[in-house]
Image 1 (cartoon, rainbow, N blue to C red):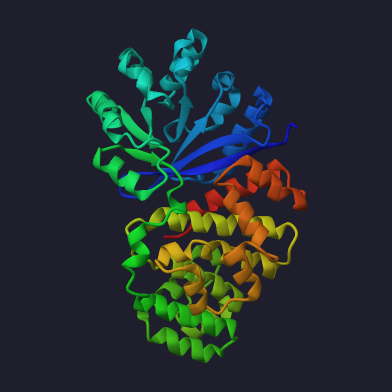
Image 2: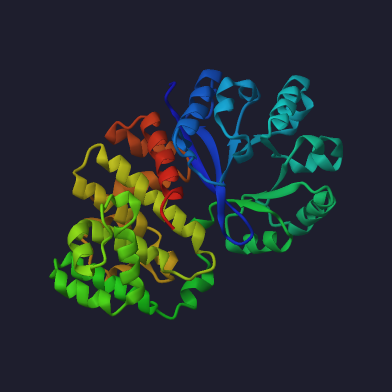
Length: 405
């Protein structure tokens, strides 16, 4: 089927846990199917359209995108739509040894695109290939770090950047970071650090205030009561005023009154803003990838929900996505999180068991981090096409990267 290629995302991290980009691949639910050149061009165009804006340019700022491409796609006209300094094409040793493909790679490098080699071990025997590369990748799926360290050491002097793949737990990340690797690809946000829960000393004062405000909003507390709580926390009050006066909300004059800010924002948008503030209030050193994943999930679930649900339900989907990693962001189990937050049964069902009205949308957003089979199965009941999912997924990424600081 021509429309069965789903974009799957892996975060790309640096050694300080910052999200510096994404590894994007086109996965099909049918392993034996071939991604045609036409479909490949369509997928690349989807990425370019989502991340480029005629007024603002590249919407991912300095973020990189690593793209798995077949040799035939390396000469597609669609590649010219991607910014060379932000784009890295992942190739294999077979690509480099094929003269026709190598010529395409050389042409891309001359235009400023990055090229990353997936099978790094071959370079130990043929280092002449390094001239065509900007990255080489080490697969850390095995536990033999000693051997892999030797591979790294043999190439370290070349000045080429090193990327570790299959980094699926924080212990492996720490080992890779200690070796001096430059970037990391893996599903680290799906694996909590063991010490995060065991060493948790409870919510910090700011989080406690935010939770109290969220409970008050859900109980439709009087505006004056909300204002009284905000006045006791100048930092949160300042952030609210800064948010309400941001260009995106289109206020014609500066709002300086907390009461006016609360009245203008309204209860549902206020609850949404507080959920975002709660997630960003963590001080965990490894939180950037967790926070960004939560934001993408929330926005992706919301966009998909807007297609078939009410506006209120779509707003709730954003909160569900944001809260889906709140246990790891705050360092406490999800049932303990929900014991502190007054949420509806529908939101609770989604977070605890991926059931109810919102659960399948959250599961679908999570599946875009995993595999095409799962995405296809979860999309089917709602008749979402791969184009629907891909466009929503990429739009969510661009939205997250353009949130005001």
